[in-house]
Each structure stands twice: as structure tokens, then as C-alpha cells.
Image 1 (cartoon, rainbow, N blue to C red):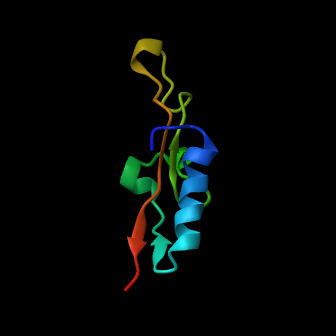
Image 2: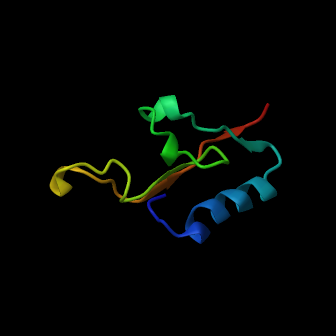
Length: 75
């Protein structure tokens, strides 16, 4: 999901988990995304913001806002 809006990211994942008891979240680890622990939410989802990866040259720094959750079907 490419939205920064919680109702389009986290809320959608919460709804999927409520409706599907055989689906669970598999947390994303910081080492899977280059060690960027600030981009991993407490729930284990990925959320990037434009302020992440800020550097000296604004044209070569920052990220787009993005949300991702990893879900797996149990069993």
C-alpha cells in the first residue's frame, strides 16, 4: 500500500486479521530492510516517511511514504 493514511494501511490490515482467523501478521525485521529500525512499526509493519534517509543533498535523500505488512496464512 502506498498511502500514509492509517485507514488505507493499518486499518485495512486490522480488518483482514479480524475477518480471517487463519491469517496472521509476520513482523518485518529491521535487518530485512537494510537495518532501518525507524521504519518498522511496533506491530512489525513497514512504514516509510519522507523524513527517513535524510542526507546532505535533498535531491538524493528522503523516501516516499509507504506502508507494507507481511501476512501469512496459518496452517
